[in-house]
Image (tube, rainbow, N blue to C red; front, side):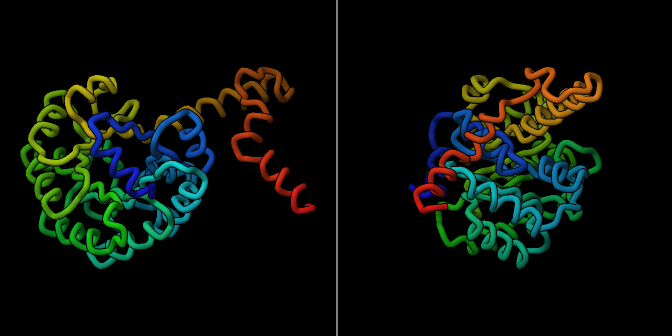
Length: 287
């Protein structure tokens, strides 16, 4: 089964699809190794790891495309790209969708913020008109060559215009052809329940540790009828804390590996990145 078809099938299944966020090939491989069915490209994680900056629209299209390509090529499960605002107008969005599809992504997030965009859990966001976003989504639908390539239409209108407008936009985006509707920056349990109930399409929620959205369990989201939940920064927060602990230990003890509980084994990372298979292939072909 193609990765696009697999992702679309998972979204349409009755079970909640849980998609942790990856920011590079290794984090994508660890998500796959942990048994998850799909990977979400984390715009925040990629901006932080690649540039050392927050998700405020500085990361460029080519940088996001290149990072997505290597993530998609590193795993056998589907990867959803973060397409931000389409990096421009509707014509740009058409090109962006085509390139992400050719890069191996199984789907793409597209959002209705103005440029430069901001992380959905930051303050002072602004959104474009619904009509302009519908033009971008029409372009996205037409650009994809595989009809199962997932278009995850995100609206940030809840914070700027309220939940009624977010629901209105969600239904309009679904009607134009979006596979999945993502209402970002939800702040209450009642809002979660309303968007899932009143948007007539599969609905996605995201939950950031320390973000605006209440922390539901996956079982609770399943019972509410959510189609998908993304956890976009769990991996990079874990990596940040682990690296800080390891560096603190290194500085204080003056000896590498003195507190191995902080560290994966060298054999673990060799296995994760496929070193044994590559070495065996080298022996097979005389390398």
